[in-house]
Figure 1 (cartoon, helix red, strand yellow):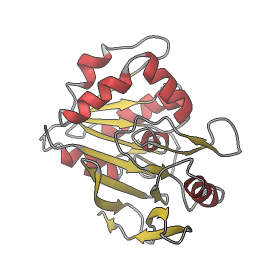
Figure 2: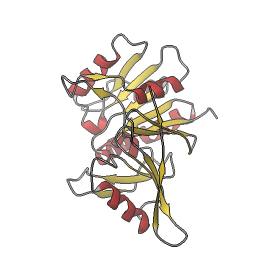
Figure 3: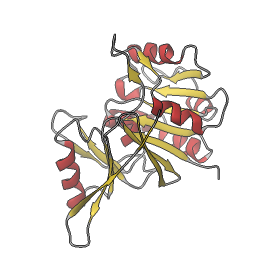
Figure 4: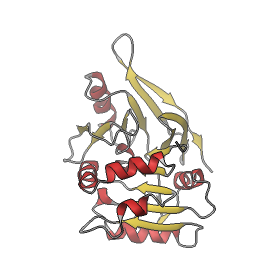
Length: 240
């Protein structure tokens, strides 16, 4: 089996000061691309969680223009723009954008992407993403997909056997809700990321915690032998 990589968390493409849909490649995206080992990596962007928003597509191609990257996208609304299996299995890196993880998982399963993406991962394609694009690889997490009140999502793809919580420092409800879900057994133990932080998983273990912003952390969240929830800080390496 090829070496398997997932880069997931709360960091990715960066907005410019001029427009929230005018992006540049963030350090975490560059880190994911470097894992492929390709001189001109093939990068496929998936915006299912955001309804294949055309502004996102424009931002993607703007960010990758002039870079040594062969950029493409997979669009599922209203029909796939490419053959999903053939295209995804030919990529070096697959980046999944944020939005509704509940909608993402439902649409993916309808199109067989749950199976295709597992195969891609097993064949060595680097999987990566932010927010919903992080939760999807895990066993589950907490989400605002149904509205402002956070709920548990327990049917992630499960490539990683942990739960996860994103935007841990910027959305105040995330931390107590995530801890409660682990405490009552709704979610398995897992990892949380502050904005600007991502975790590089090698296989199904944590390889490295990385960040594009100083002063931010990741956390391992689990039940102690005494029965309480423990939050263990993980200090990231700050990327240039």
